[in-house]
Length: 109
Length: 114
Image (cartoon, rainbow over the protein chains, first blue to last red):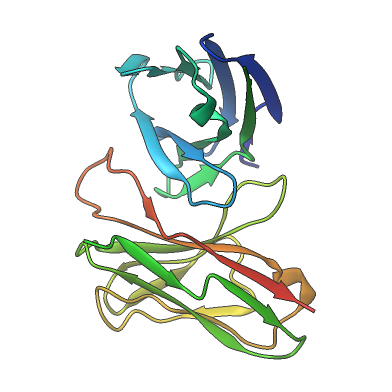
């Protein structure tokens, strides 16, 4: 079966750095996406990785290791508005997205 | 440019009733999707479409139907609503030209079946 694993919840302090991990087992791999979802709202696109390595986009970075079936999202200089759920999704061999359940990130002052 | 528009935002249905969730996008995207999101679970694909006149089943299609008569519209039909269909429904679209193009989501429909 196909599986995406993320921690259910994480807590971090405003101004700090947090790393959200995602491991996956899918039938094929055609890219990995990270989305942010604030409570009661729609997911919004954050990043895309298809090759191994780090992709940096402002305060957010995303890393991929295809051999390990592993990705992480790194958030720097945390702000209160970063309190949200972060969803990891892998595009499989059928070009469909398989979604993790999301990691709820709580930011404390 | 409104993006992806979903209506209604909230709805309460009685068991056995039917309804249509509307989804419209104004970005001329070829690909459109319907997902449901249940607490503690990842988004599940219900149906998708790669262009006008073409639809296909996703992971959890039972109890639902779709149509794609135009590029813009992708309505989701629930026939004979059941409590198991209580969920938040998201419509999404993507252009389909680039590997890295992210999905644009509508604001969601929160459906309760009682």
